[in-house]
Image 1 (tube, rainbow, N blue to C red):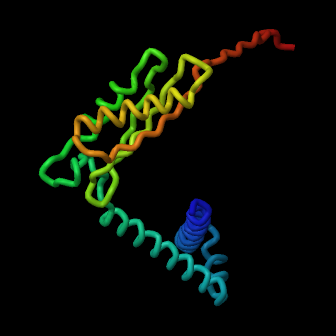
Image 2 (cartoon, helix red, strand yellow):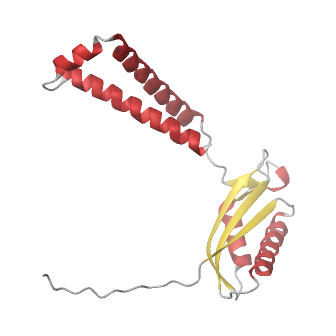
Length: 182
C-alpha cells in the first residue's frame, strides 16, 4: 500500500507542477507567447486538462478525508459497556507502573483503543533492559504483569501488550580535527 501511495503522490506532484507552470507561464514572464503556442497543440492542451483533473481529484479526496476522519478514541469501554469508560491515560499509567521492575527502565508507553465497541486496548511498551540475557522471559513477565494489572482494574479482558527493547548502550565517537589550513 505504501508503494501505491508514493506513486499517487508523485503523480499528484507532477500534475501540480504542470498546472502551476502552465498557468504561470501563460500569465507572467517573458515567455507567455511561447506557452500560448505550446497550448495551441491539442496534446499539450489535453495534458494540461488531465493534470488539472488529477489536481482537482486530489484536492477533493483531501477535503473529504478531512471531514470524514474520526478522531482516535481516548477512552476504553470496560467489557463493551458504554456506561463505563476508562481513559487511555489512566490505563497507560497503570501499564507503566506494572511494567517497571529493577531489570528495566520504561522509556515510553503508547496505547491505542481498538475494537468495534472500544473494548480492547493495545499497548506498546518501549524499555531499556539492564541485562543482555533472558530478554524473552523478561518480556513475557512484563506482558503478564501489565495484562494482569489492567484486567484487575477493568474487571474484564481486552488488553494486549507488546514489549520492545531499545538499545541500552550508546557509543560516543570523537575525532580530533587539526585547525591547520594549508
